Amino acid sequence: MISLPGLQDADVKGKRVFVRCDFDARLSERSTINNQQLTIVDDTRLVSCVSTIEYLLENNCSVIAAGHLRRPEGWDIKYSLTPIANWFAQQFDSQIRETEMNGFKGWEIKRNFYILENLRFYKEEKENGLEFAQKLASLAEIYVNEAFGSSHRAHASIIGIPKILPHFAGFHFTKEIKVLSTVLENPKRPLTIIIGGAKMETKLPIVAKMQGIADHILIGGKLTDQDRDLIEEEKAKSQRAEIIIASLNEEGTDIASESFMGFENIISKSGMVVWNGPMGYLEGGFEDTTLNLAKAIINSDCYKIAGGGDTVAFLNKHKLFDKFGFVSMGGGAMLELLSGIKLPGLAALEA
Image (cartoon, rainbow, N blue to C red; front, side):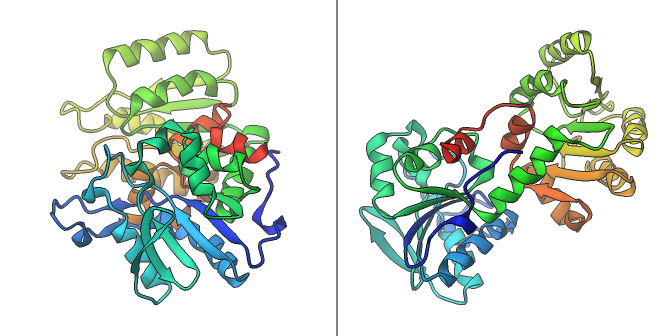
């Protein structure tokens, strides 16, 4: 079992604490000049940070929370964290006030609780600049990582600050590692891993690494011919996992019905299922198969784990979130951890 320094073991009373949160919430895509009109359509990642922030405030800490939204190129008002700050103000029954801390723009949410503006507005964040990490670290005495979904990134706020400050895992981060470690170390078998959705080019290299733990790997979504060739090569080398690639329907918008039935049969016999990514487009009325897949998982007797932004939003939309044993805030981070890749953010907390 992976062992991390947990927040409950830290002496935080009265301290200044930097909390790296997962603020990359799903917002409405309606274009607007004033981004304060943007609305949050899925707040699951924000909710996952609340218990850690509340705990710190209850211990008379000054909380400086920070994170990112999307992938802006420089300072771009479209990706401001204003909607995130307003969301937290509602949770804490307060009003935001613009402020600045050591040159970082942000908001005071309530007394002793601050949120910094989008860290990815600064190129030094992605570059893991030492001076940038030191400047962020100067705001606090303790560092807490509550952004599991971003911990596969070697960015300054993920791996730079922990080199400078005493560091701990937040409550939800700790739960992520505890649950996902079970998949690695003692899964209920047969273990079935389902991979779909967008960004397939980043997910497919993980298939090779997952063969050592999975009994079945089911792959859906739109693949290039090159992707299929790579998977076929892995199938030929696999000594344990059965790898199945779904066929697409004639329109190319979803997996074919016969592929779904094959997936459903395997799911019904599984002891544990880990699902990341929809089977087809979720817009334009093409989500039926993904919904049927979710129901097939829910109706089975397996232990159910889901993860990834699209998957989480889909489960929330259809009020199925609570039907799963655990829902991870990480998409890429979850898959990388399960494939045996050492997450930079995890390694930084262990150091």
